[in-house]
Length: 358
Image (cartoon, rainbow, N blue to C red; front, top):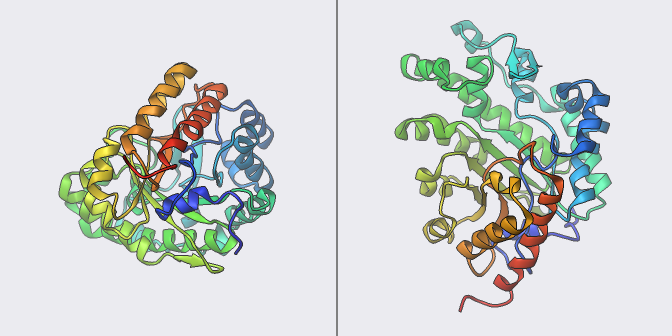
């Protein structure tokens, strides 16, 4: 594997020296871009867009045509794994993702099998390969998956939820059933991420969107434990090059030490975490990614620049920081504000890489 010409992201994730702080954005391909909405209309639905490698590759590349981002992230959805398990994923306008067959009965849980990504998720792997070819090795490609627990939340609830009562009821009343789901999910996620690496992903990220909703000890037992299982099964190199990984638990700041010790290369932070304090706490062990409040993109270029400056100053001098939002780009964010953020992150960060901390 040949490293990208712009390998700033990969070096930052491995805490190697960089000339500036790299930036990419969660949901950088999405509804805030008119060209994305046009492609989705051509596909007919969000799920059809995900399942069409030509269109999925097109929308993956759209933000890179507009902005000087330091990475692409493959366009897909975290719920393709449970869909491939036979749960029947569909999307309802205004309600988000739903499953036709949520896991409620014991026999359904016992019969759950991890899918073969080469067979059942081939459309994602074809998208990964197509994007890698189209990138021409200019910037790295990030692959991703939901965490075992986050996937289980949707699989048990049957869709999104404000409180996840069903999965938490199972957690407390029938923990052995939830552990069975999580074991299957962990195997599925490892195999899926490894397949993405085989097809061209040069870094991978685990999105633990709902781990932060758990009680303190429950997070360790039902979320972090299975993230560690995934990480232990991941390919750490491909084609002679390291493949760094990122773990992001939304609302996970209180478990920063434990996440940093999980075996990951980088920890994603939401906007509630003090980036400077996080660096002092775990920055000797892992890179850090984040953590601008996405709402800042709804303000003005001047405010965006100032808030970006604060993030960079909080992290301080040296490498090991990947600039990102604390969650995804809002559909209401003007594209020109994203451009202002990318420009600010690149321009303002150079002084932090020219010399050691004073």
